[in-house]
Image 1 (cartoon, rainbow, N blue to C red):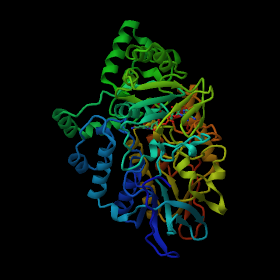
Image 2 (cartoon, rainbow, N blue to C red):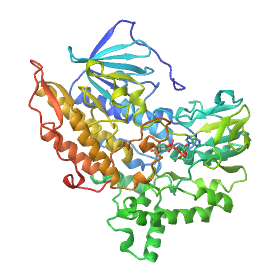
Image 3 (cartoon, helix red, strand yellow):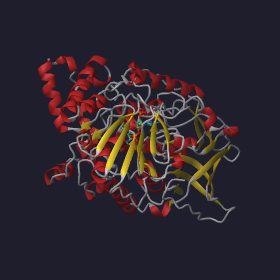
Image 4 (cartoon, rainbow, N blue to C red):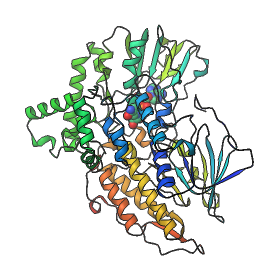
Length: 574
Ligand code: NAP
């Protein structure tokens, strides 16, 4: 059980709570789904949440330096004009506490907490075909019987701690960034070792280095990072945002990655070397994920990507004073943006501090954790007081597979996904009627600014449930053929980018030993995806089987349409 959770039951054992819908998780997705089903459709709904507060991923990820990589004015719900007018962000990239404050503000404004059961972890969900109900169980013995089961469990909420031999023998303390103690950790005077240099490690290192006596960063794969250029938001900017919500909404809902900026239509080789260098320099100064917007083809053309990669490597070399450290940091084995591109505040500068060392654990991997610290295969041992595992997540599938979900005839989700996740639109799995997976595998989710992806999913599911209820439809359930068609398209979309060049990423599940290697998110772009989902619904839920509420008979089935890239304009993807 993650640290900080106090599981509690609200029901005597044996009692079953009957509901129209149960939502699992009280992060961005669960909160909005509750609001939509309860207040728009008038349904009896409950959210069940393992944490003791709202926030989902943000409830747990409170490591030093945790902040959002999406710009605050776009990392917001856009469904309520009033909410947009009432909330004001303080920084370009908000820190963890401000995001949690925002989600609490939303939950309080819409009186959501009264329908959220905190400190309760869902352990099992089983479909009863005869009753057309989902029976849901929790770790604390609660039982629910519901018509619709909606998972809002997040994509990055199950932590991944490598099975280092001897971890339990460590005499100091160790923490995973995704389960950081809620009271914080005092790093003053401590020798800290940080394993991992992904987005999290890159955010955490400068803050840890500023507090700790010494920081050793264990790097397996060197990573690109672009300065966030974070700053407090000016009164002018806040006013501009307030005056232009509608315009911002149009941008975030019509760009492939849901961010509040458009990607240039210019290609890298449309301009000469000198002009290109100036353009990169200009976007570097703007900073953050906007760097990727400098040219259209950075993520689809390897030669084009090489120019961006070299520009970033030169920047790293210009910052890091020790040539050996700079060489390790620039020995990057994948094209820029094929792993989720981190953004930072003083990451590379951190290596110029006297109290920071970089250790290469690619050439000499971590062999074990000893009582004293970290031992490498080459025999080197690093004595530490605290180990920070910034080692990522069992992404996208982990949170769902941690629940024993069984559909028709006891069909286990774990079995259906044994060779990798299969979904239709990332929204449903064949054999699991009336179950919806918000930002599930096969949807843009992590390749999009998350709240934008979430709002689209929640609204699609809400409209769908509303339709089912109005039209007297008992079940909606996708088919194996629809999933196969969708997966073919998901792979096609990934192959149109450079992402397959980085096969060792969590996008492929490659960070968790034994996890099937399948590209999980949809890289065809949020714009295209939004249109596909809209068309599917408007065409009578193509690719979904529907059954009549009166007698359970099957309604006419419309097979899934053509999802080839050519047939699904507009593009491009990420
Ligand atoms: P991650 O990208 O999976 O990075 C994990 C790091 O741990 C990698 O450097 C990995 O090395 C290293 N690692 C794992 N096992 C190891 C081992 N046995 N030995 C040595 N090193 C090991 O995880 P993350 O940094 O937590 O980020 C995950 C995702 O969360 C991001 O991609 C992003 O989508 C999201 N995130 C978002 C924000 C934000 O917006 N605020 C902030 C942080 C994270 P390898 O690369 O060699 O595997």
